[in-house]
Amino acid sequence: MAKTFNQMVEEAMTEVPVINAVEAHRRMEEHPVPEKWRNPEFQDRSRPIIMACQLGLLGPLAGKLLKDMGFTNVCYLEGGLEAWKEAGFSTAKTTT
Image 1 (cartoon, rainbow, N blue to C red):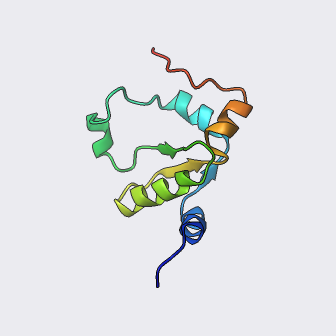
Image 2 (image 1 turned 180 degrees about the vertical axis):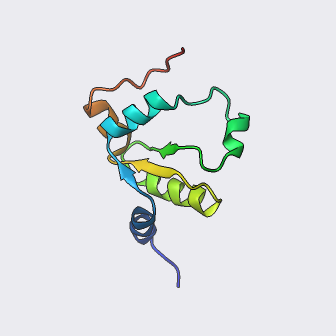
């Protein structure tokens, strides 16, 4: 039986852990994002990955897709980038 978008989101939300903006920021500080997508570090399917979208509905779907691909340390940002900005975190790219 075909699923609706909302059913798919609800299913994904039960399978992918959720974190808030403060926790996502802390994790990103601990594990900086690699500059290039094809970085060899992504061969490690246990590397921490935080999925996010604008409002938070696509993050769980993307996280479930990664889990289905064998990634084991995936979560999604509760409330998406809007929650990130509301928590006072910058969306500007920074370099170290």
